[in-house]
Image 1 (cartoon, rainbow, N blue to C red):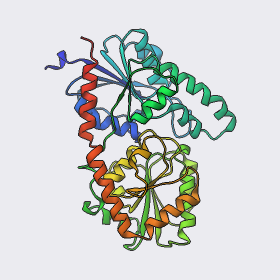
Image 2 (cartoon, one colour):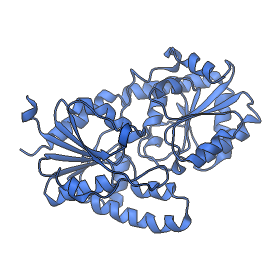
Image 3 (tube, rainbow, N blue to C red):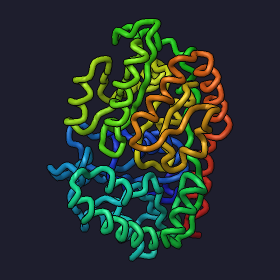
Image 4 (spheres, rainbow, N blue to C red):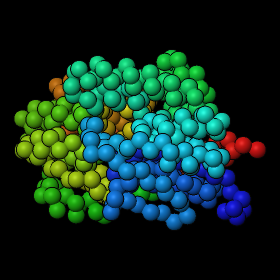
Length: 385
């Protein structure tokens, strides 16, 4: 089929490269496959000189404001510019409900277009946990919840990463039809840590000794990720496990970054493009997050054969099997986290056993090829006849 005969897919997102988070990793991985089946236009923020271009994909770039909300800088409201992109679209595929995603979703609904939203997060939980001001949190959380429900109820479909998330949204009176498509991980890229030739190089580069145990995290540095609890747990842990190191990879809120860099034994690395090598330098992966849907970073760690210690946020409790491939701990409970980490630090055989199970789960349930295939087939099925 020639490009002239392909259906037109309009992707609207408030996050895109060069920003690195779960949404941008998802899009940058799926776009090459989608571009074989659709003519793609992406509405995304304009990052200036850092903006990304891709072959056979048209970009509509929206200027950004100078305001920061947590670690996120929103785009300006460009109603007319986005409106011009709507008529030619066969499907509008939104990733966010910021100024770009929300406007595209609503205009698509008003024009009776097929509008499909991917729920990368529970927006009102994200706002509640990412804002530190008690007054702002009390004000914005209910508004965000109402706004999210208003928009989602005007979609043709929601794509959700798990049955648990689908049920939760239905419970919240979001009646739109839901298609469950699990996020996947590239198991050929995120290989078992002991097979990654860069593991030792990364450890040597950052002064990690052979007998030191590395507890790691990679992703956005933001309030809702609750790295403060991880650091507090690490400080307690070092009293019993003095050869433990904490490796944090990612970028975000500068005040949190500065506090991380002050701690003895903490190695901080800004966001990188080859994160798989840094994950392979870890021995234990930890996710202290307060809100998630799936957590792509955790799946990537599992694919690298790492044991995981995590909160039970979102879908995570369905694939971190307590006592099988990791441990779940109580949100914000640094003592509980320290105890779970201590068990793994003291028992290498247990780490290996848990890591083996992690890899098996990633290979069996979360192959990226399956995600890509199901997503493409579903979007094609929604093209108006």
